Amino acid sequence: MISEKLREIFERAQRVCVLTGAGISAESGVPTFRGGGQSAVWKGMPFDEISSARMVRENLPEVWEWFDYRRGVLKDCAPNPAHYALAGWPDRFAEFTLVTQNIDGLHAAAGSRAVVELHGNIHRAYCNVCGKRFDIRGKIPHSPDDCDECAGKLRPDVVLFGEMLPAGAFERAGRSARSCELFFVVGTSALVYPAAGLAEIAKRSGAVLVEVNPEATPMTDFCDFTIREKAGLALPALTI
Ligand code: BV8
Ligand code: ZN
Image (cartoon, rainbow, N blue to C red; front, top):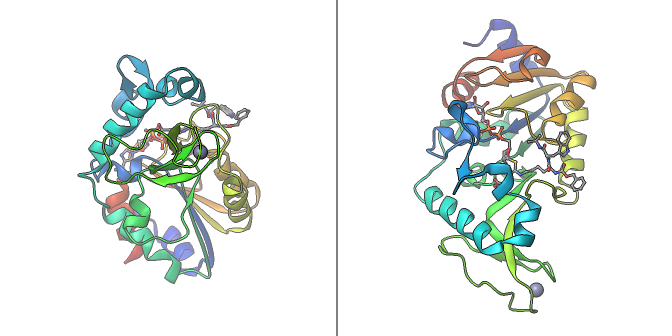
């Protein structure tokens, strides 16, 4: 599964960056978005329609129903060996940055610190007027609906399609992609931008690119190494 050459590069590496997607949480029971040839759908709406800036404007209650449902599914999901393996990587490298597209909070639950959450976190909400943030973990359905500081409504603290990424997040991830010597793309279909662009930034800056994914993606041909395996097996195997 892991070539001797990759293992040698991994052992010698000092500056490492990892980008994860929904695939790293698949073995925790969290549904992926585009797995098994179908895309996430909510009441007939494709994923990038229900999870969009337009839907927040037009039908916020529907967006909350979709996110409350997903938080309900997440209640029974725990980190898997892939999350735990990555939680130990900061001790192996002089510089390590973990960037995730996931909003499930499982990297932090496994002990990872300073995770760059490019797309926000499903366990938080913010007021669409004053921006006050609320922790809604464990509150299903979410509550309160209204901000306790102003007349604003709360919305999930998640980056939806057509929305900007959190200030500074992509910049921090980009700095690490530019400075690392080894960049892992784990469990992502590499379709969503600007997140997927990080691998291209790393490659152009001279990093060795490694894909961990049981399936091929548009990123595969770009990678120096491909581990065609589930993350829950591949990452612990690298880490022994
Ligand atoms: C923005 C939160 C600027 C919501 C998400 C440039 C080019 C092209 C398009 C665009 C572009 N710039 C902007 C766009 C539009 C859009 C976009 O990229 N669209 C795509 C679909 C074409 N991007 C945006 O809108 C972004 N915003 O750029 O702002 C702007 C804004 C306003 C005005 C001007 C400019 C915002 C994107 C963020 C959207 N929010 N999530 C929610 O969750 O509801 S993205 C969503 O898809 C998820 O968060 C996820 O992170 C992301 C990517 O999905 P993956 O993580 O890759 O998951 P997927 O299911 O697709 O794949 C799973 C993979 O795992 C598979 O490959 C599978 O084989 C593998 N796998 C399965 N099991 C395992 C495994 N791997 C390992 N182990 C296993 N066991
Ligand atoms: Zn407010």
